[in-house]
Image (cartoon, rainbow, N blue to C red; front, side):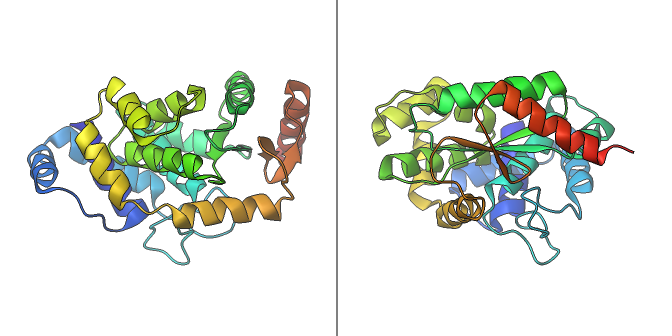
Length: 254
């Protein structure tokens, strides 16, 4: 039920329109009558309304009715997904809004195929969890054909409600990166392989890759994985991450 909700809302907010199969469309139409879905959609729309993209570009979230919108931004997509996942987990809107108000955003720039991504991602997530309410976003530059396959898979998972699960699976995946292996990976987590194949054939990730590569270049990133905290490059160490976060929090304190 809720995977359909997330598909509808995320697709509308991020991609505007998307071609979906007739059977899936009928399934969504049937599910959309559920009252709890409507409540979650309403709460998500209220939380996301008028929000600027957390990539700090000054534009609005991807797909926003307000302009200019940050088209194709992976950070904005992650923001929308975070709100939906939090609501589905039973988190109160006030708590989610507090989380989104954090002045710190940790970006991890790396492709899923990077051999060091798992170590750096886990480090950033652990420090974030210990310091509370600090978001960690993966920025994938899509430097190879294999990396772009993984990005397509992750974005299709986002659309049908399995984003965080598949993202973590891809981060920990050691290869190979052929389509059959990746499709089997999603099937292991309960996703319909035929639906995924149809999605990856039609989804366009070019704008997202361009945006992530642009932001990496603007921040002076030359190697991957690289961590930035509020757009500033930070060493991939716990001490450096904590120091950078504490500096931001101190500057933001009353």
